Image (cartoon, rainbow, N blue to C red; front, side, top):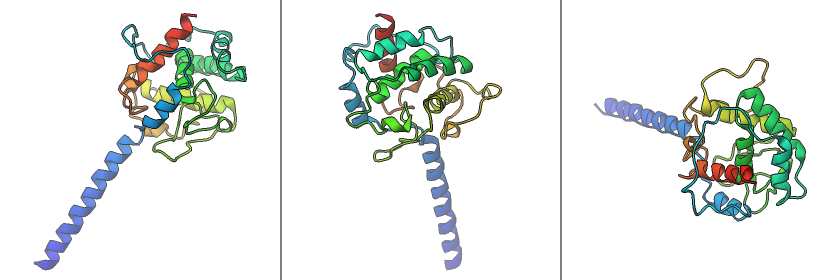
Length: 217
């Protein structure tokens, strides 16, 4: 009887480990950005997150409406050293994937603090990581990419994973290291990223608030 008890105990323990592991795998794309959010918001000059009453949601997929020149002008006022190539890539790559590259750009503003990469942001400028990819817990520096184009493509691909279950556009190579971590088509709108991309119930609203400031200029 003793050996049967030990066997049942080991089986039960293995099942518990498997369940916990599966839960962690499902949750691995949910990031706690509590301290990061605080640091980033201090860098969003001119954007008031205290009033979200006039902020509406929209689909992640769609036609990019704001051109690269306007995106650059929006950032340069707060970061004169901003590289315009980043804006060009968000428009270009966004259009290849059918993703709103202009709004993805606003998400990158939120994640990087006007692309300054200052304060408690978990990534630095040389990583070309504009959306915190791979920062799944405090202390991790996240994924790194060789070029601006690769970093922007990884961001757009991650949004694509959330927005649709379609395969990547023809000819596109997967560069997002966390693409498989996303439950496909689980967040077709920006508000759907709340408590998914970051542990913040108004994460999508913040992105759209920045976008509202962009198109209001």
